Image (tube, one colour):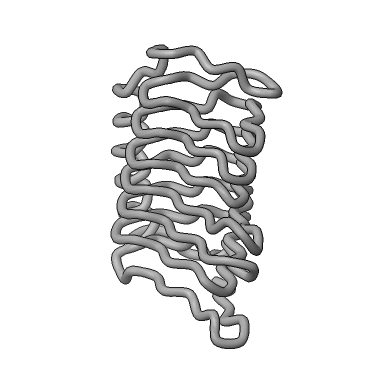
Amino acid sequence: MPIYALGDQVPSIDPTAYVHPDAVIIGSVTIGANSSIWPGAVLRGDDGAIVIGARTSIQDGTVVHTTPFSHTTVGDDCVIGHIVHLEGCIIENGAQVSSGSVVLHRAVISSGSIVAANAVVLNDTVVPPGALAVGAPAVIKENRARQGDIDIAVQAYLHKGDRFKKELRRID
């Protein structure tokens, strides 16, 4: 797996985390315990820091970046779906950003909230706890997130990470 230091910016990856061999980790990136980073994901901490909490999945094709002014933080027990773009934002514990979504500078996705598939959360938007953000630009629907769906996905990716650590092997 390509893991790169950039000058004095060196990734820190918990030994219990699973990073797929085709993911790319660059610079100031911290990955917490039992988190998983999947194929094609790019976490590029060059302008600022990226922090991924514990038991969080960063799924296939996702790009996580920063700005010179805003770090990117993803909390514990989060689900970041396929082909997501996170940049200079905060994803609080127990939140989900669904496939194809974009979350931009200084946006906050609060605990227990969900960004729906293909939604675009613009700069400085706060998605409140338990809310659902849908559309482009995202419209906030209070109290519409289903926490059970997030919990199921977190558990599924904990299992997948363990399975891939044990069973993945290249055969070409």
